[in-house]
Amino acid sequence: MIYRNLGKTGLRVSEIGLGCEGFINKDDAFTFEMFALAFGQGVNCMDLYSPDPDMQRRVGTAIRDRRGEFIIQGHLCTTWQDGQYKATRGIGEVRHSFEAMLQNLGTDYVDIGMIHYVDSVDLWRQIAGGGIMQYAQELKAEGKVRHIGISSHNPAAALEAVESGLIEVLMFSVNPCYDLLPSSEDIDTLFSGDSYQKSLLNMDPERERLYETCQRLGVGITVMKVFGGGDLLSENSPAGKALTTSQCIHYALTRPAVAAVLAGAQSAEELRTSLAYESAGDAEKDYAAVFSTFPRISWKGHCMYCGHCAPCPKGIDVASVTKFLNLARAQGAVPETVREHYTSLSAAAGDCVECGSCEKRCPFDVPVIENMRQAKAVFGR
Image (cartoon, rainbow, N blue to C red):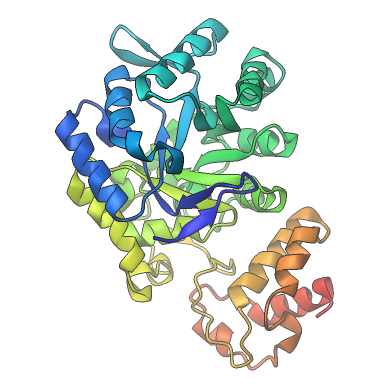
């Protein structure tokens, strides 16, 4: 298992983590089987959005002996009423539900207090200036929450939250179909087939800016809906062609600031399939070849950080150079952290001899040579 820094939190998370939806309405035996499998493969993190008290109890029992080394992303603003999950902004319900979660889990803290389902800019502004953020900050001061985050499907709301400095972690829906769509307060647009009927060209610039801003500011991203609820794995995929589990995971993990994919699994076999990413070869992970054949979608001219440009005869990590160039472009300047990362590269853009071998291998017709020229001008080498 590979472990990654979760932004500037100081936490190191397994790049494959657990989503919790597969644990709902299951029994103790299922829960313990899944955690034994996850622990055996080095998984050390989980998202816990559901307020289901029975599920929380089972998870708490499963992780009890490993609590100090297991990272829980627990949600505020979800509550359990009449046997049903409900999102809430009522501060009384939020307080009661959070304390119940700690009790059910048998712990006195969660590593990430995730403010749940912030899908509009107006809602984020209400939260940021109101009682919910104040409560989250109180919990952090008391040590009951170590780091504050939000979950969102809307890049406009997420970007404002990230830029506010109030959050350290963003849980966001990242996959190659959702990344094409403009921001919306209606989550259903992500799932609707109508959203993908017209030809779509390249990543939505607001989503790209969100990822690059998270990288620049040190806000770690944990990924939900990496498989689009399973749609991307079927022939009914919005892309018009099925992707594999490893391709979906690899796409998400190559986005800036992404630290972990929180994979949903309804069975041990589904979890094994996700965990198999860690031992998959480059060909199994490669999403670029299939992306270039999607019938209605094109990433032409856009670097996907897929690595098909390698190897460079001068040893340049073209994908990393391009990623740092895009981060500088998004900022309109060179952030110090980006400059430090660029300086640590063993070969810089200025080493490019413009042989063109990278451009011949690129599935997306990226103007690599021009990017190297611009990177040399921006970074000075």
